[in-house]
Every structure is written in C-alpha cells, then in structure tokens.
Length: 227
Image (cartoon, rainbow, N blue to C red):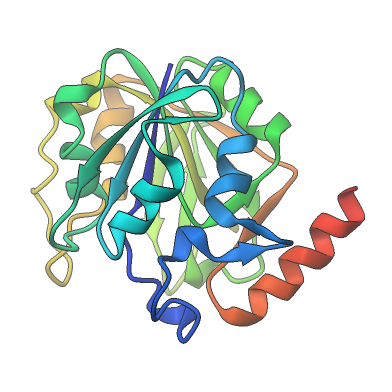
C-alpha cells in the first residue's frame, strides 16, 4: 500500500525554526518530525510518495530513495496551491487504496493501523477549538456526511486530523471546482467523493499537531509520558 505525505509547506508559523530547515525535519525529542511519522506507519505501507516544495532538497537528502525499507518517490509542488493540488500531482503514481497524511502532525501507530483496516477512512479527534480545524459531520452509520474547513459556527467538535485512507476513484472528481485564496483544498473534493464512496469516520487516541514553536515542547512532554 502506498502512502502520500505532504511535505511542501513553508512552515511559516514555526519561524524562525523553519528559516533554514523544512518543517518536516524540525526535531522533536531528538528526531525529525518526518522520522516520527514514517516510523508510526504500519507494515502494510511499502512505498512513500513525498510531496516536497520549500527546501525540498533537504528532505530528499534525509530520506534518500529507500527509507526504513520502503521505496521513496518524490513529487515537487512548485507553487503552494493547496492540498488537493498536491494530491493531484501524485495522480499518475497512485493505484488502488492509499494512505494520505501530512508531514507535520504526530499520530499513534495503533490509530494509523486502525485507519488502514477500513476500505476508506479518516481519523478524527474531539477538539475544544473547532474554528481552527476541518470539522466533520457524520451520517448515522458513522460515515462522512460533511467536512467544513475552520467554521465560525461549528456543527460538531470532531476535527479531521489529516490522516485518510482513500482510493484512486477520488481522481474522478474535479479538484479545482472551488478556489480559496488561490488554493484548492482536499476537503472540498471529499464531500463529493464520499457521496459515492463512503468514508468511515474513525476517532483516534493520539494526535499531536505541530503548528507553533511552543507546540514542540508540548509534544515532547506527551511523548515522554508515552515511553
């Protein structure tokens, strides 16, 4: 099974740490964020497709062509045009089901493994600040009904944490139907995709988002407790 990891962003909220280092290589507990993420992947993942952009050569040098026993393919996103644009750059490389995630959040290995046990799924976690995240609304059967990006008036407090199991049917939909400030978001495509291909909404136990410099110390404290 393939895993797409988006690692092209500039990490502006993490400055000055990201002035000379791409966000995925920022150290947390002595290890690059990207290392934590890849080491948490289940054994069923045998190929990594990493979308690079800002300081991408450092990520290529760090991971090489084989990383943790997995083949690594790189796709370059020259312009920051959003998550849908980044995924569509990988279209010709993807076959069947694949895992999709970001290179700047930490997740529990058991949670990722659970996600991959479903045909299609997305990981979520309850949040006290729904206005900061993509918020998920479920059908009665537990599948995705709607996802709303950073709502002012949230219909739920269940946040998408960015880990999804999708399949190549998603490329049947138009990623550029809706533009937001020059970017095209995957959340806008998911609603249409989920109408034909149900996505199980799976609540997870561990999610550590890294957005600001102070989040690194918080993450290290959480990881220390897990040892």
